[in-house]
Image 1: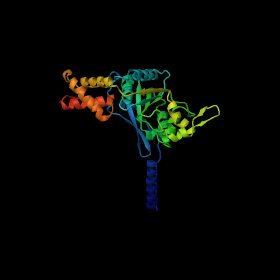
Image 2: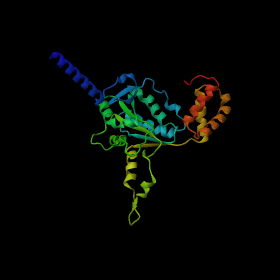
Image 3: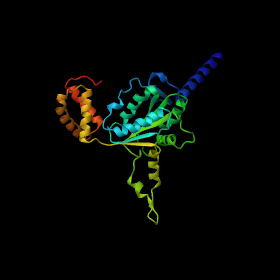
Image 4: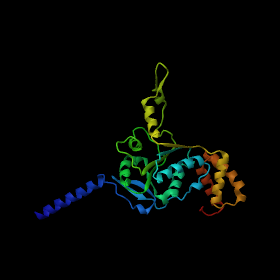
Length: 293
């Protein structure tokens, strides 16, 4: 009888262990001293905050030709770190122009003052309330960072982010802001059908369709919009020279390098800081120079 009871107990314990593995668990705190940046990852039904061991060392001074955008985001971040009112930020526009780099540079600039960053994938935005609750009592200031953000109709993370920004019954934690980058200004695809559903009254007043209102409502909840634009040729070449200098390319090679950089940009159909950096890295590699500092 005792042996039978032992077997039943073992099976129950095994069943409980399996259930615990698939049921959601409260988000546990990481080692906050391990890094200034963390990634939120799902492991089955469990969410974890993983320290980023090697944070990109880019500085604000490394970012050129986006001075206005840089100052707006830097000033907002500084106010946030100082405990002053600050806004959630949406950085939109041309690819490769420094949107993500600017956020990382702000982290490096203000990490000594207590700024921390938590990167969250779009698929995991439904867990934003759990993340905010976990850090609410911490003395640090946290930027929740969503890179290359856009949604298709019906995605669950859309509603969660919308409520987190402005609309939930619970007040937003004062030590959390959301910084997001996107190539779309309104974060949702807009279709011709949305415009066809608009109505007009007798006085000619335009009444946008509910679909249009819904698609612009999310981006409107970001208090600060910062737009980025493709570089002109001169701006692009100035950034190329900056990265050539960083890689130790002698000035005597700059003319040849810049001519090659224009061809490089033409082949990629883009003039941007990212393309300039990729070209300089390729050029430095071909002439056998070391890595940038």
